[in-house]
Image 1 (cartoon, rainbow, N blue to C red):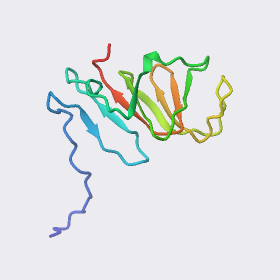
Image 2 (cartoon, rainbow, N blue to C red; image 1 turned 60 degrees about the vertical axis):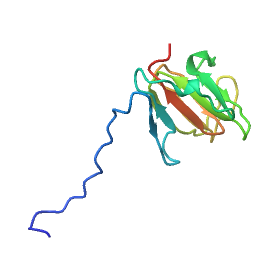
Image 3 (tube, helix red, strand yellow; image 1 turned 90 degrees about the vertical axis):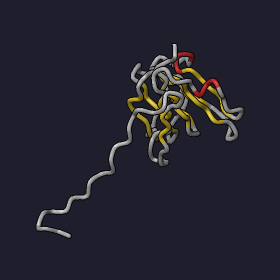
Length: 134
């Protein structure tokens, strides 16, 4: 049913950012994308119902080295969640790099935040972006 007009593949319609007030917006992502949970203002935080197999860290509680870097050492059986209201400015797998504290983070996952901190981890980290964090 082509009437001479060019056919253009349109992207799928955007998903509304207006989630129900009692829920956050969970982005189900592929491996090459950032694992992220976004909490709507005023919505309850998933922190109120923590998973027994995960460790929750608040970004502001982490102590970076002089270059603003933190390296997390975790076991395979523990998942790490980082709670923050800061925007993520970068993520991926680190190129060849040694931190100011002398840790070789080459090949580790990294997550950079707007405040200048970068977190490195050998396993995936779930970032919980919650504007309600005090």
